[in-house]
Image (cartoon, rainbow, N blue to C red):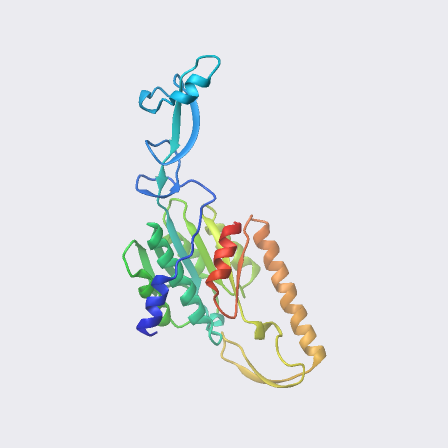
Length: 286
């Protein structure tokens, strides 16, 4: 990838917020667990419940008809870890998919850095990929490194079973995990991966190509390829075949949505090209 593209990755930042309060001691951007001397205002409590005269709220105390003394409590602001756990099995080698996944991961790395959070990248196919691993870090310019790492990690293999093993490399504390895959895997493998991520806040990113879902001409010869086996064959596309193709893709996506909904996950759909604005809107609705 060109240096200009890498620079764009580092300048593109998407805001994200957590649905939970991180633990830890490192000051950061997210309301954390416990009490702090500063941070986000939480509530007023009686002085007897929180005997800290430094936090007395005089206005609230004077307004209390029962003449109680009240102190202000705060939620400390803490950091977390943002992780991209990405599928690098053979099916992710579909034309153009790798570049869009790299753009997504690099943007998330830059966003974590701008927020003061750590970022880690873990790639897996049949097993964990050593060539697609970046340990948790707050280094500047991490977006460019993530883009370059994924550009050099060619998808390969017949399965994504390594995703479940890769989950073991995540921090033990809860973190924000973007699970990136086309999810063309057996239900058992999907369940195994999601089970391994039980302690984390998971955002499934469903990588899709509209052509593979039947967005093709109704008539004509097409060469189709199996990305995992490398097999190719000619298909005569016609309206009835295209309709069956589209119906199968719709059924698969519906089943996938049901699997995520059962665990309380809402997926982000990356269709054809990564759109940072679409990701911003999605994260704002979480």
